[in-house]
Length: 474
Image 1 (cartoon, rainbow, N blue to C red):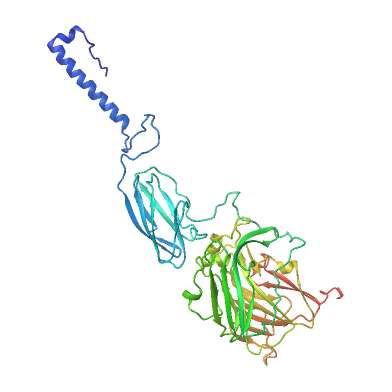
Image 2 (image 1 turned 90 degrees about the horizontal axis):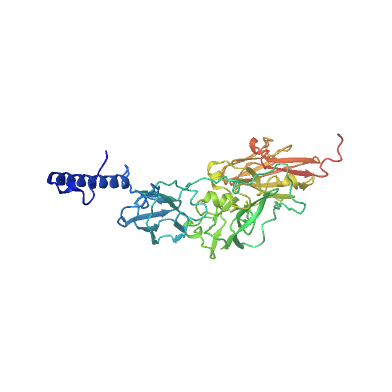
C-alpha cells in the first residue's frame, strides 16, 4: 500500500473531515513505521540484530546474566561434575577441591592453570563467557585420560568444542615412524644387559634421579622419556633375601612422580606417595622374598608414566643360587610412539595399539649388537615383563631350557628325573623369572618374544656362540 502525508499548508488540512482523515493517516503511518523497525530489529529466534543493522551473525546478550557458582571435585583422572551449564554473560566462580592423591589443575581452554594440591581447595573465577568451551587438567596425560570439564554456555553463540581426548594427527604432530630397514649410527651403544653379582653387604643405598630426557628408541626415532637416572629401563638393582634397600628418589622433572617397588612390603600411601618437582623421598624396605621384581612410577595415569620409560627391575637372589658363567637381564616393554622428540602416546597405550615391543627399551638392539657367549658357558637369563599391555613368551631358537624359575619357585630343575625341558618362559604383566641353558654348538641363536606378531616388531636379539658357526662346514 502507499502512504501519503499532507504537507504543511495544504488546503485539505483546513477541512474538518480532511483533518480527521489526515490525523488517522498519520497515526497509521507511525504505527507502520514502528512495526517495520520492530520487524527489522527482532529475528524469529528472538536474538537482537547487529547494532549497525547489517544483519551480522554476532550475538550479544540483552543484559548481563546473574553470577553463577559451582562446586568442582578433581580426583585422580576425573572431574566431577564433568559438565556445567553457564548462562551467557554470567561471571563464573568455581570452588575447586582436589580429592586425589596428586597435584591437579583446572584451566579454561588450557590457559593460566591453577594448581590444586591434594586435600586442598581453590577458588577460580572466569569472566563472562559467550560460547561453549572446555576446561581441563594441564598435567601431562591427565586431559587425555579424561580430566575434562565441558562448559555449556546457554543463550550464547554456537561454537565447536575442542576435542577432549585423542591424538592430533596433523603433519606437524604425527607420530614418529620406525623404519625396519634402518640401522643405528656407528657410535650407538645398546643397553648393557650383562648382570653383575649381588654387591657385598646387607644394606644397599641407591639414589635415583627422575629426569625428562630425549632418548633414541629405534634407529632415527627419538622420544622424550621420563626416566630413572636417565635410562629406560632404569638401573637394575640386586641383593639377597634379608637385605635392606635405602633408595633416595629425587624428582628433577617438571611434574609429580613416584616409585613403587614390587620387591617391598610397605604402606603405599607413605612410601609410594607422589613427589613434587624439586623434592625427594627416601624409600626404605627389606627384601623378604626372592624374585625378579619390577619398580615403576605409580602416579596416575600410571600407564602413561610406565609406558613413557619409568620402570626397572630389582633382582633378589634365591638362597643358594648356583653360579653360572654368564647372566643377562631382559626387560620387555612397548613403544607407543608420539611425535618425534615428544613423549609417547597415551591414546595408543590405552587402546593397546603399540608400534613395537622391545627388550631393554630399544628396537631389535641385540640383533644390531649380538651378545657373545662361549659353547662351554652356562647361561642364566633373567626376564621380567614390564609392557603395559603385552604378555611375553621368552624363547631361544635352537635351545631348550633345563632350568626354569618363575614367580618365586622352580618349575623345572636341571637333572630332573623326568628329563624334562622347557621351550619358553611365559610371563604376564609384571611377572618375572629366569631360565638356564647352554649353546654348545657354535652358531647364532635368535631369542624372541614368541608372540608371533612381535617377531618382526622389534623383539628379537641374537646370541653368538663361539665363532658364530664360521668354522662349520656348509
